[in-house]
Length: 300
Image (cartoon, rainbow, N blue to C red; front, side, top):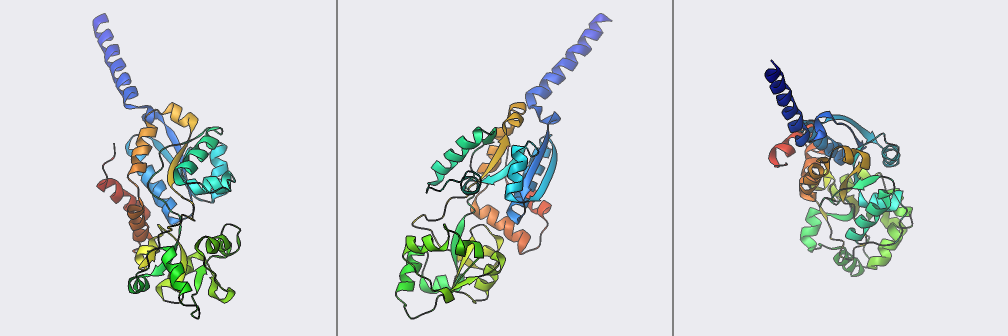
């Protein structure tokens, strides 16, 4: 009788020990937050599906503005989010100096550690600004860098080159004017066309403008045959997507960092650009696109 009871207790202890060794994910409740644009929705959905398969209970809160999401995470209402190095540096930490991607990552990681926010491994995904040309124009001229574009504009002084961009970039101190200075370009007032960011892609696609300010991983870049030019003088800051987690959550779930780092390593511009296109251009639902990503990428 005592032997039987001992064996049952021993078996229970072994099961509990195995569950603990597998990780505390089985008891973990995580709140994942995301911003209000396509890429963030799909990153949050991939993370949600991946971690649920690992045994976590997930509450996803998406569609938030950057500042609101940041405040919620600092206040402990959001546990995990995908943040961009450039946003953290320029918007949250007010860093004004030019930093290379590695230095920027290390700087925001150090600053946020004081707030108990841990930056895990930055992904190769860099959703930064770029100047875009219609594909047929890029192919005809052979222009692939902003320096080449600047040289082309200088060689055609009498020609009008209409540059479409959002109003914020046109007027902010780190926007159009310093870009012109960095590359030796000078757009006249009639050449600068301010419009909603989403309309820039349509205007490029319809040959209504010659140049457009775009985001490198927007699905319309691929869907509308737009060619992003290389920022060969490194004017635009890096915006590498990185999982950011509250430190108490990582302390409670020792395996979570490795899981999110593996996911981060699987993301790059081509992969995410294609997923964004599937959603914005092809009309596929976010959960289906996320599930396909996880099916085709081997993660631990």
